[in-house]
Length: 237
Image (tube, rainbow, N blue to C red; front, top):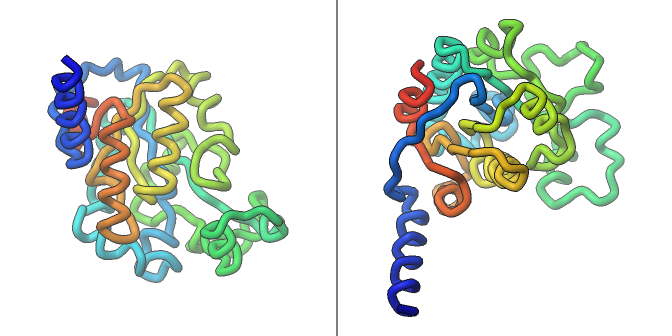
C-alpha cells in the first residue's frame, strides 16, 4: 500500500511538473469569476521597456501579448470581471532599507517607476504605464484596477479585499512575471480560499528555466493550469 501511494504521488508530481496534469475543465459561475492580469505594463511588454529584453524570448515563444489581450477581450464579451494588479514604485520607495535583491535592482534602475501615485506628470507612456494595446480594455470604466503591489504578491495592496467585496471566489490568472508576481499571486489567492486557474501561455518569464519552475508550481498548487483557449472557453468569450 505504501508503495502504491508513493507511486501515485510520484505520478501526480510528474504530471504537475510537466504542466500537463489531466483535469476536467470546471464549470464556472461567471458572476463569481474574475480574470486577473498582473503587471500589464510597458517596462515588461513594450520593446523600449527596461525589462523587455529579459522577457522577449518568452513573450514571443508563448504569444503572451496576444493571449493576454484575448483573455481581456473574452472577459469583456462575457461580462466576467477583468482585474489588473500593477507593480509600481515611486520616489518614496527608493528609501527602503530592507528591499530584496531584485527589488533593489528595480528601484535603482527606476523600472516601473512614477514620481508619485497621484502625479500624472511623466506617467503617460512611461514604463509604469499600462501597455498601449491593453488600455482600451483596462480604461473602459468597468475594469477593477487595484492599488499597486510593492513586492510580488497582493499582500501589500487591496486586491483580495476588492475581489471578496464583489463576491468573487474564482480567479483566472495571467500576466507578468510567471515565476514571480504570477506565482506569488497564485499562492496568496489559494491561501485565502480562492479557486485559481493559471493560464500557462498568457504569462512570460526571464528564461525557460524560470518558466518551467513556475509551471511546476502552478501544477502543484493551483486548482488548474489552462491554455488561453481553454480559459476563453470556460468564460464563454
